[in-house]
Image 1 (tube, rainbow, N blue to C red):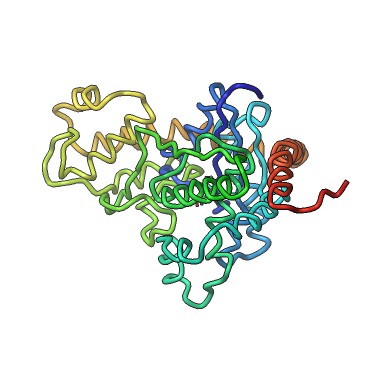
Image 2: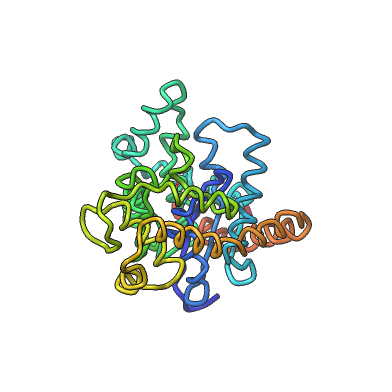
Length: 332
Ligand code: TRP
C-alpha cells in the first residue's frame, strides 16, 4: 500500500442501493481499486442519527457490505469495513468536534433539511454528523473522496477542519479533495425526471433498486415518463429521454450519437424496453453474487473482520499522532 493516492468513501446502510447510487458512485469505487489505495466503509454510525430499528440496521449493514462486494469491491484489493468496528472514527470525531464551530455546523443544508423532516428528533448526532464524516476521511489521510454533489458541503467542512487542526497543532492531516465522476453523476427519477432518483420516493416506479428482478426493472422502465415528441436524442428540455440515454449509455458503454442512430425510426416504447433489458442484464450478475455472498456468513465475517483490522492499523497511526499533538498523555 505505498505510493498510490488514498481514496476514502462511505455509504449508509439503507437496505439496498438504487441504480443511481450504483451508476453515480459504487460502480466507480470498484474501478478505482487498481490505481489507488481504496478504503471503503459502511457507515452504520452515521445511520443512527435518524431512528433505526436495531435488527433492521444489523441486517442492512451486512447486506450493504455484501452488496459492495457484489458490485466489484474486492476486500483483497481495498480495505472494506464496517464503521462501528473501528474505534478510531469515534475517537477522532471527538477531537475534531473541538476544532469545529457551532456556527459552521448550523449552516449545513443537510442538517437543516433533516431537522425539518424529523422535528421530533433533532439529536446532537444529527448536528455533529459532518464531524464524524470528517473523522472517517482524515483518519486515513485520504487524498480523494468520491462523493455525490449532495455531500460536497460536508467535504468542504472536512477540509476546513483539517486546515484548522493543522494550523493549531502542526501539520498532520491531508486536506482531502472531492472526486466527482464526470459521467452518470446523476441518475434522475423515472417518474419525475427533474428530480434525483431516490429510494424514499413515494412512487415505487420512480426508482430502480439494484436487487430488483428483471420483470420489475422492465416494468418500471416501460412506465418511465418521457415527452410528447418521438425523437431519441439528448437535448435540453428532454429530461426523461436524457435520463434514459444516460442510463443506457452507462450500462452499454455506447455514446449518445450511437444510441440516437441505433434507435432512429423507432419509438419510445422500443427504447424503454431496450433500456430495461440492458439494465436488467447488467444487474443480473450483481444479484447473483449478492445472493452468494450474503448466504456465506462465514466468508462475509472473515472479510469484514479482516477489513476492520486493516482499517484500525491504518487509522491508529494517524489518530495516535493527533492525540499526541493535542497534548494527551501517552499510555505507554
Ligand atoms: N455522508 C455520506 C452520505 O450520506 C456518507 C459518508 C459518511 C461518507 N462518511 C463518509 C462519504 C466519508 C464519504 C466519505 O452519502
